[in-house]
Image (cartoon, rainbow, N blue to C red):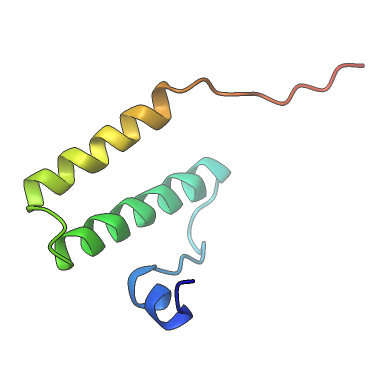
Length: 75
C-alpha cells in the first residue's frame, strides 16, 4: 500500500475557487492529474521527458477512444 506521505508529495490538491461551470472544474482536475503524472514520471526517471509525454498522450487517447457510457433515466 502506498504511504499517504508519498501520495501527498506527488498529488496536487485542487480546490475550485474561480471556476463558474462544472466543465471548468472537470477540465482543471484533469489538467492537475496529467501534470502530476508527468512530474512524477520525469522526476523518478521512468523515461525521458519526450517519452513520458508520449506515454501520457497514448493513455489519454486510449481513454478517450473507449466507449463512453451515459446514464439515461427512462420513465
